[in-house]
Image (cartoon, rainbow over all chains, first blue to last red; front, side, top):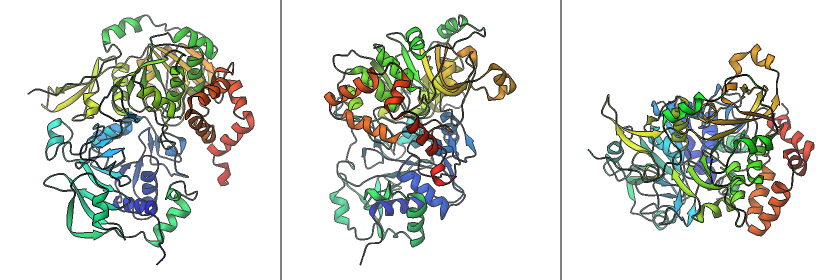
Length: 258
Length: 334
């Protein structure tokens, strides 16, 4: 049977389905933005979209290249400051945030700062937190979208840039982070994962069509928990694919990468 | 209860009293501040200064002034890396081997990358060499540090960064709320020596208008000891007085006003022109090889005597016309 969609399209559709109508989300460029645009055109028409540089409720004509470019407030309801958006998050008004990173561990802690053991002379220097640490500290449900490979899914990240559940249950609250929030889902090219209530470790919830358990284990550097029963990620609907290809990413900037 | 401590170094003085002594001497009169970019940078950016730049990423950035800092070989600067992308990339050109060291210390929130465009090979080489000292923060916490300074305070609390290595490598402190007993992060005020901000319109005295998102620039203009404004257009003071509610940065914060049309190029300027993605890609490509990058810089950065010559090299009016059409979505039939 011919495959109707690629891995990127599946990831974007899976991310879009997580966004409930009437909720708020802070998005970055790339997959998160495509997911929010798709959700707004399908299952979540009343989704309130924020960009961290100050764009509020834009009607996105094309996908932004920067989290602060003029598309991020195109026909929006407000163009404000970064602090104003972040403070809405700190007040508890942001339901979802999308993040990524160079490394992620079993507790959903993210590294986007450096690879290596010597902070003063890193083997690889990455950008740093940007707004990621702030969003992961404040937003109710953090969704991570990333490729699934062993270099990325590691037992211990070289640097905790952005908090997941830190060292496990209660650690966020003990550090002083607002209670009741944290990583919610991790979407990769292989699976959709959540976090186990008791241990706060990553738990595989569904495998994408055609993916088996062993593939996921081979591409993960730590012990995974598995949901029972283990679901299959629903494939994208024809409608979602049509909107994604015609309206959200007509130039295939994102979906053409696969 | 003992709190974890952070090991990063504070690169600026958070004292509100010291800042007050400075601001006491800052002129309050309406005077003509219009000058060239090279004169403004020569007069107001000094070796060893703490520098902060407005905008976000490659959006509404004062490119001409950043070029000038590197051309004038300013040395030993501290820098607020507050989603700094193309501006950071340009400053790193001042850290080429044998050409001195423009950047010496960086408060990091976001550096080295150009968002969806990828990582800058040269900025990575500079930051991986161990020659630039870093302290880690986040986009919001740097904004809060500027806000504390704009308020005339030594610190502000916030609830970010707790529990992470970002905190451990910062210069923040963990405190207890005196009212609720909750654990909070205390962020030291950031009073930069000099800030450079690109705006849409300003009058000769430095009253400024910005369209679109303001990022952290309103606090930055108030927090910094000296402020250079570059603007797309000078407008008459009469126009400012006609609608004072549009003034977002007041003249008494500002020390120099430089008119630089297309001044955010190759970045985006809301309502004016979109970013030149081809030129930004060329910059990234040239950086891959250091020898090639030196030649590129000789041609595009050190060669031109001013920003207009740079714009000419990059395609001049015809290219800018295309970018304006793109910004206004004219190609979509609007």
